[in-house]
Length: 247
Ligand code: ZN
Image (cartoon, rainbow, N blue to C red; front, side, top):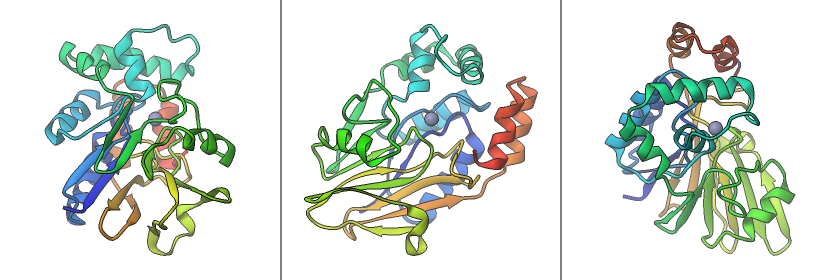
């Protein structure tokens, strides 16, 4: 099996998650890896935990997974996110919380590394939006390819002899990027459950270790179904609205 589906920032959105898994299966993905943040923001934390358990794939610790499972003070969290962290804690079983709290900050296997945010501080959850921030992560990246998430915006950072370059997946012909030999890559696969790049469709990527390609995928799902669950749960209205806007 050469195709690995890399996905993350599912954020308790089972509608988007199941649509992505169906898409990955239709492309022949035989393996899965996750960049974390299984929970937070949306209304299906238990369902998403159960689906992750069924997949049994490597998954790293996201900041929401961390905050939900560690019972930490939430005063420096954005208020919408904090409200959902508390709501999520009440919806998960002890086994779910224990499993979330035991996630590793990084995973290495099949020649690639997976981290939620950055390799320079995997437990610090900093954001990588520019080449300078990516350069700091590259200093600590030991495999040629590292997949991450956290910003919810798909992006490729390429490290070569001459520096760090940013490649926008939207500019790739049919969303397929061919990895160049002798370079290092820090690749953001976007978010399954709450995309923020203006495209509301679920985002993930398929890495083909033989063809040496990364295909960026966008998958339509039933946004209205997830919005109805967010409203029924009494979660902030803004969280329902942002799904339709992809922001
Ligand atoms: Zn996230």
